[in-house]
Image (cartoon, rainbow, N blue to C red; front, top):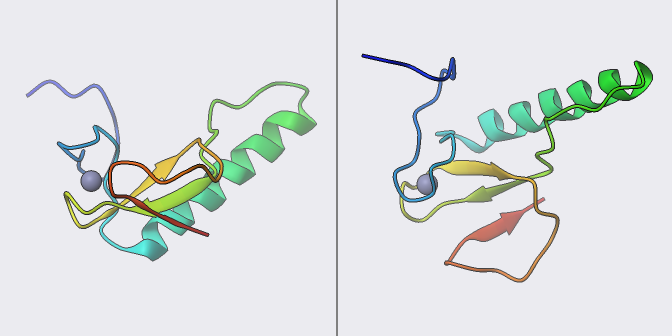
Length: 81
Ligand SMILES: [Zn+2]
């Protein structure tokens, strides 16, 4: 089966985003993204890891990351810190 990503996590059919089963996994990924950004900044480059928020998805009952900063809620998602 062809794989375009190396993600360890499945993709949510509702959002097309990587699905984290637990909030702690989503938060860990956010920390990794933040670390990637910090490393790129110190190198004078730009990281593509721009996820800044985690939210709970009612469709898959998992958690996803988003690049969006706090915005009005849409499609029944709940923004988490
Ligand atoms: Zn989902």
